[in-house]
Image 1 (cartoon, rainbow, N blue to C red):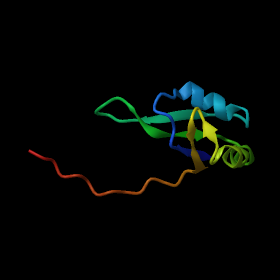
Image 2: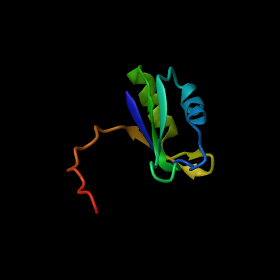
Image 3: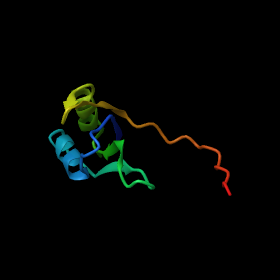
Length: 90
């Protein structure tokens, strides 16, 4: 199951994110979304857990809790919506 984590501290690393969710079960991947122009975190990320029941426990336990000074929003990730292509500016 893919889990969305929002309102992350901008200083968080993928290893710290992985470590926080590892107590609930196996983690296949932890990914923090980075702004391609600034190289800074966008304040959200994803954790991929292969076991759905472990993932649900992680969501229930972590949602609306303090994580390194910020109250995080944790839920099952929704599929990315298709957006129209952006027009190039000249």
